[in-house]
Image (spheres, one colour):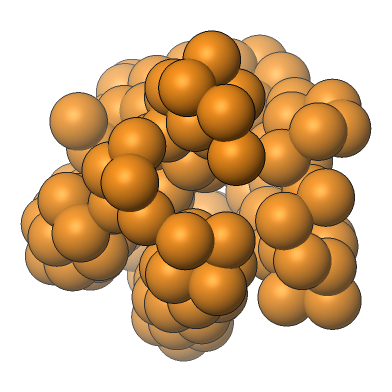
Length: 151
């Protein structure tokens, strides 16, 4: 990679590796004796705080001098970690009032991570795979769910 390409790659990798899956916001009842929206979001935040820290550590190993193999390996590690966050969040009692939207956001994260896991370095030259997940998170008011929230 040339110097400009290396810097761009490091910046893009940093953005992708910074994806986090947490939540914060208002409170309402789940209607099913489960968690309130606030309780759900607090639990999701706890799950994602750990995930964000792990993903940040993965990203710290990448620099302008990293090989394409190292960059792809880091992207794959971060995607796998993000998928574990999604799985852990799905295990929570998602309040019915936000369940559809949370499910859609988590599915978008899984779509993005699948793209990363199936691709190589070329994933960095295309559109940000987390754009849809970020939009869904923003619409829900889940600012910690947006890419870069863990940095």
